[in-house]
Image 1: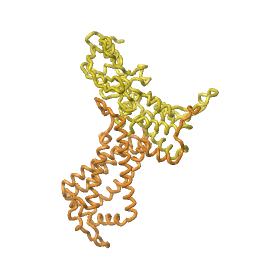
Image 2: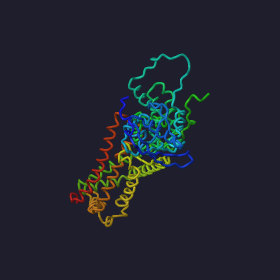
Image 3: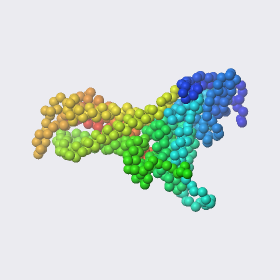
Image 4: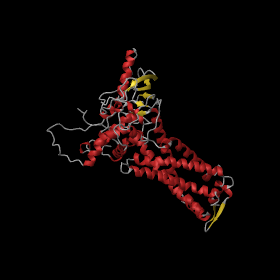
Length: 261
Length: 243
């Protein structure tokens, strides 16, 4: 640690407007809090930890927010910060956002993901199990058990593997839904479809997968894609909207000329 | 155990229709295919319209040819009508769904990437529809802004008396108010197409990261060409170049 910016009084003084909501059935609202002496080296979530400690000391209910690995790979953290899912930095999850990105005196509005299929559980925590249900419909490959296959038995072209791996970067955080003006999860579903689309292992269930996952997406109540491309801009893993084109193409192919009509 | 395979609804031909009509991607495909047909019409219409620059003989001859197409004309009109209704039906259904998917909006509502053209699709679409209805009442049904149109006839070589659509157009767009309405409506149509054309490619899956920049540029360029092609005639009339 370089040790700069740790002296008392040298930190950031911020006004936080945080969405507080007891549960899905109770209406919520923004509540203002003052955060004093926040170190620019802190992560956004560490800043919220400090605020929560102070709330607990005062005997108030701490702010509930989702987090787990705090390394940008688990997909648990969320938060719409001043209108940006995962905050103002591109390709960055909220846990990897640092307070040096903000200036002394800033007003920061913190809201939960907002979508009908993502009901608020408490404060900034939303229920994202709709994603689990979509995944369970086809976000996997069926593999027979038996002897371990040889690692290089199935050749895969480098560029196809790259496309698959790019899609597989999706951590399922839901920022695409939060950013989409239609609360559509097409970037998420597209990423999960594209991940297997480019691999030989994904081929046997290719059409079933896209039909079943899109049907579940729609059944959950997510909106449709209007190609605003907001999702791509918000995605902390830089998933491209080309995965949506691939999903659309395969969905239509499965619907019109698939062998499982 | 059947938990380890991907299950899809029971097979059947009706599933094809179901999936197209009921799924968000199917509804968008309907918008894209009908949009493609309507864009096709826009460019054919524009090409015909530019013949105003060739004078009354050429333009009235072209109009007479179109009117003489009989069954083909009505077939195409029927297709366009179905196209417009299917485009609207899918658009409205998707819009209702999209609005209900976010019942509570953000306190700080920010746009990150969308173009102005994309953001205004649901506004420009209905305005263009109103303009099309008005335009049909004006030139096809002669119900509005069409005083004296019945009397404008043209002596076409080898044919005889035909409606003088050239003169009807000239008289109409010598009026600055009508020209202003036209220019504004066609500009909004262009705004709709600038996003609509590229959206069509993306929705039908005819897109990837290699084509994407080209699709985007082509979409905007085609929209601009449509606007320029359409506004050229009324502006030339207003300026006295066509009379």
